[in-house]
Length: 352
Ligand SMILES: [Zn+2]
Image (tube, helix red, strand yellow):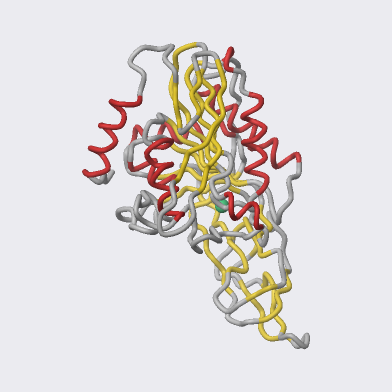
């Protein structure tokens, strides 16, 4: 596992400052301070800089018994609503009296995306709030926000969960990612967490090379700091169906049981479909997209997964999959530009 020495030393400094030396101490994140056995809400304050300030909501649930610190985040893509609603629910349902350890919940990182209904990016600076870790205290709003979340939420945690879902233009089946860092102990713990989470399609996410500056998601940032991590996706096209929201809430609670933070048995998923590679199928035309598959379809190499027309309805091109596998996501809207993603195809792997 590669570790940026500068990040490591700042992590250790921060850990020494913020972790309570004795169980029962208050836990503070942003403006939220929770006594042992209590819940508190507040904001991670991101001061103004080259652009506007923002306040990111945070919930601290400080258990009545000792245990690890689990951080959960959602809404870096602010229109992936099912994942945001799931953390809103979880924040209400985790009972501090029954909790061993501390749960930190950041349900909505990208407030401007949410409130303005802008998918994928932070409309304040046009940046992707899950690609810019470790952030920059002197950068634009996205970079300043991620710098704050990295230091105040990710670094002091022991375990990490990042929730996503199909965005406004994405029709997606539920799945999770199991990151492969090369650190056997870390990867084994993450595997236990992803099996406990319980989704029955799991993408084996391979890291190739060091994290790229300006292209680093929060999960990779957490992994590089040695935090076992699960990423889960549920929801599609702006919906908040109960089965998607519940899958994320129950999955998160099951990980807490796996980590002995909540009482109760965990029944891990027994025979998940393992996905070894995800292939992005793109359109080579501007135009109108018509899908021919739905999520969960199994497709054969060369099969049409959709087609495009021009703005008069004339057929332009078939879009074919270059690999066989399962459709994990297909574009849910007719808007299509050359180079845009039409679908993700997951290639089935044997159980690792
Ligand atoms: Zn997302």
